[in-house]
Length: 393
Ligand SMILES: Cc1ncc(COP(=O)(O)O)c(C=O)c1O
Image (spheres, rainbow, N blue to C red):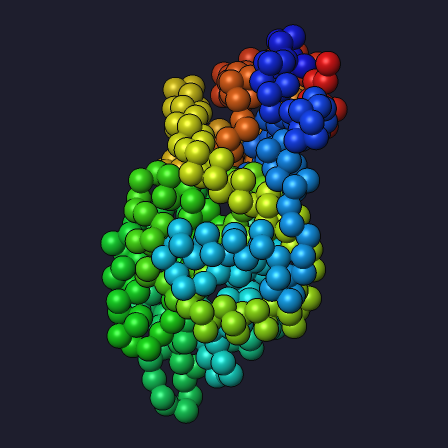
């Protein structure tokens, strides 16, 4: 139950969603609705897989993907190659594995450097993998416009030299979206054209490229055309339980398969992952569910601003950045205040995924008024986030 006493989803919808393939027998379980994810703004990785994903897993093929004989996995790879306009695609377990396998595949031997945004996931959150797996020097780029890096920014850090003192740049890695902000297609094209003229490869951490495309910034094919390798995630805003995919030329994917195996990413019955991932792409991305979250994110930013709050970044997709310092509240206090209304927060960054509904926004409104207008919250929420279960019968 939601705190207003109404179920978070109509019972009729639950039944429809929960009609398992098994002879139409109705079962309601943890897959039947968003559950705690409906009140969780920490990230889009918290999205709850759906009954349709469970059904797809239940009816998937169960053959061996190291032998490349699983039809569901092969079909997903062909489907993504087609969607991205690339020759081939390869399943990986996570976004980190997608970036690391791609970069290791593209780079040969040191001395070599990789140029990337200083805030990028490969610098901040991948355990230094580019250094340890590739022996590469990673050079951070600072966006002059404060939002996305441009060709002019990239040129400042790129080394094109055969001087024995130099560490030549062999790869430029972009991230789109980054912090929820879009790198415009035209800028990707400028960087890509210049990189290729200078024999530098291009990689895209496209964990959330789906969001940029849903926001109308360009098509998947247009964006992917700028890059020699791309990594896309199924288990963030699209809502799959596990999995990412990389795409590029056939030759790239053949070598990437080898690299993937060397770090333990060769899977046996991979159909249990790829069946759900396919549903995630079809239902959430192609089904058009992402744009509603972008609208909701804008609505949340406007609410915050209407109470006098400031945002730290523009809302271009599904992330809202509250400036907590300006609001005079610490991250810790903000998280604690959120808990009082049954919301899960990580700090000033709120990720609005497709399972965030009206009730969560209402609670957020209460929180904003408490933080910015000094209104007291009524203590602990009736249903604290960690206790929220999706209603059964
Ligand atoms: C932009 C970006 N790239 C890559 C990743 C890594 O994904 P994973 O957590 O699946 O390894 C993340 C994770 O949140 C991300 O935000």
